[in-house]
Length: 257
View 1 (cartoon, helix red, strand yellow):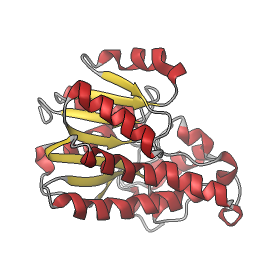
View 2: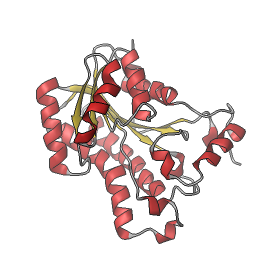
View 3: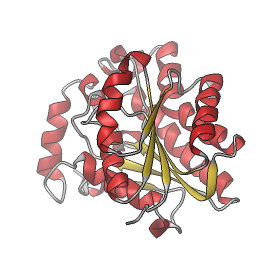
View 4: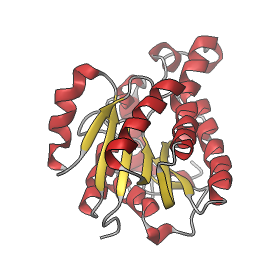
């Protein structure tokens, strides 16, 4: 198993349809011990039930992934109770609905800041805090999630595309920073999937149809398939890969039309 004896922290678990859950399932099947963060103390029972199939896993509430002090407090507790980790998965993103339902030019300053703070800065913060708290084991691997809308104009993706572009640039800079200590940073660019977050994107169903028509493999990707790619990046099998955006979209990104 690729992650036998490894401890992996997955930030942003929400429900069984989420990409974070797909990553958790793959990592667990490959031997990882899982730790989760989630948002909302009121969701505690739901999250504990959700992760109950991952024997020995733990979950910690984090109500502000882009708030320095809250992340520090949660990460400190995680380290105290679990020791160092071998992998960190960042699966957190959000934009205001109104900024996804109108032309990008009308994005508000607050909406722009919110999308970038939650979707991009939270990643930088998580990596920095993990390093400052000495949470990361030698040869640790960090993975985040992005989307094709970071490099191409996707209808109704708008400010989230800008936030993901910032996230991808952050992957490269963090890879250089952590590479000095033998640690790796990568991103998985997943094809569109019917997640709770995707419901906020107008006419999302039409995107799925286009993928089936145009992608070389003529099908939409699943959360578990994306999870398998993330598991590879978390494992020693990818120990020469860092600073990369790995597409898991059945080849759609290579198409010119």
